[in-house]
View 1 (cartoon, rainbow, N blue to C red):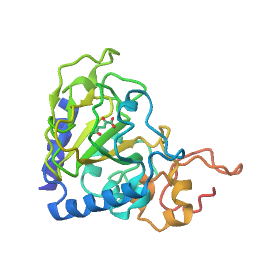
View 2: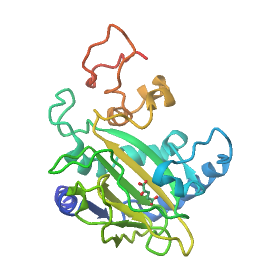
View 3: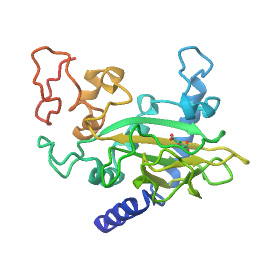
View 4: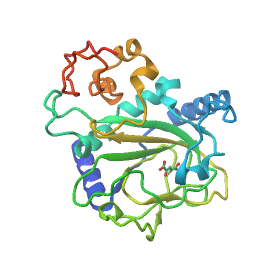
Length: 269
Ligand SMILES: O=C(O)CCC(=O)C(=O)O
């Protein structure tokens, strides 16, 4: 049953560049996650000098409520980012088939970033990759889990279906709105042209996830952020996604192969 569902999402993503998992997270959990999101966000002072605003196209959302690395503050968000069948779907695209040191049916890609944002301001059409490659060469994917209804009236996502296979720098496409209900998750290629609509109603939280091939530059150094001792306690899949098995070593005697497998737990910092 799950296999068929996963295959259908893979087909949608290949064709359109995105797919929507409806009711991915149940309503009760969504209520809890919203409460937690509000609580964590209330504690963070975005006006503090240590809070770094988004840059480039993303600077338009600098005044929105944002919690970068929500997974650092919440085990519930970390669990959502590192488990569930969206990981199986993404493995199809981002797993390195030559990795060799982790079982092929398990993820060997990494989590690039995981933040929450309230959809107050809109984002212009953009892609979140530095190279738009033709054919089936993909190295970065994103997910948005809607913690409230997110649609064309309250800052929801707009996408240009099929644009993930274009290499043009001109991002002038016809866009369609993605109307997510709370608990729905969209998975899309980071090279799919996307934007967000203007918010005319009440903004809501979105949990924004970026996953990347293990060999790309990570957005965050989770090993140092969480601390190696804490990371060691997580499951093998969580460790992999946090970069534990593919982190460049600072040990001059370490192997030149950056990637390692589950049996090698003695990573030196
Ligand atoms: O916050 C959103 O809903 C979309 C965010 C987005 O487009 C991005 O992070 O690239």
